[in-house]
Image 1: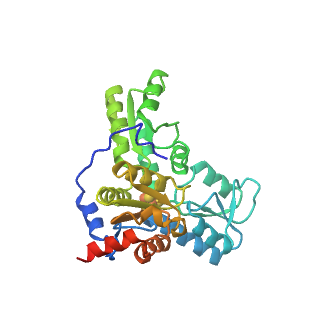
Image 2 (image 1 turned 60 degrees about the horizontal axis):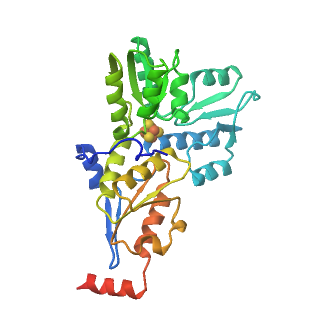
Image 3 (image 1 turned 120 degrees about the horizontal axis):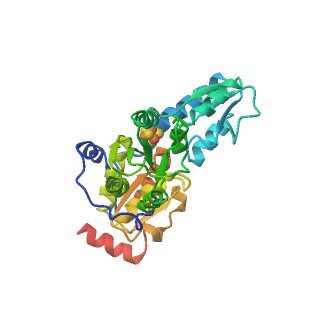
Length: 329
Ligand code: SF4
């Protein structure tokens, strides 16, 4: 999870025209006890939707479909696909038949080739934006730069990008890591920078600043996923205008936990839940305005359940009655 406190003061910024468009899509519902505002975009991003659809199609058309790890970090989607026959595995070296689905995060190109050499069919559900990030890294390397990827070295997408490169890249997630790399002579003078597609731009600024300070030449290709950036900006703006912010998504989803962390920075009264059943009245009955946002791999149904629960919940305590009385005046 992103630790905003140890990294950077996140400046509040004006929304871009596209993020303003996302904001216009917010759904606001007022009851006599609270106002619930749903962020402009919730549910799966297009890359996740595409990967799920390709997998569903493969399960209809083919036998013995398997995947390395989870298609998305979401328990309900994973359960649905497994019920339809998708098998999850940690490796494929012992297989000689079947169809391997590649997740939206991508896979190192050697692994894809290895699967094909073993005689496996491959359904490549790598998100086109992730593929562009892989190409951007390669083009920087071709220009003679040491590739620096700002992101989490353990994330599947970063492993895929590293695996697409001919020479090793340096993965950096904090300014401290960058300074350490410099001290250990692992940082070269001419670098080419790309970003993990789901990273918040605000988290990247201090690292880029430091790179400019430490290196002679810095070339940058902005590989941050723009739709996600707009969605994040809208959620952060919403968080800073409500009493309580709720982020819905799996705790194993890096982008959900990063969104939670960023929202909490803008509004300390931010909570993370995986589904509506985790909500307790004490969590939210005190709040007049509640914002709801979600991670990129959270099904829209789960978010709607949370929203509906917040709208429908009637607080019958005396305190609530007196609030409703004031609100009705
Ligand atoms: S967040 Fe962006 S890059 Fe990642 S899968 Fe979704 S659309 Fe693709």
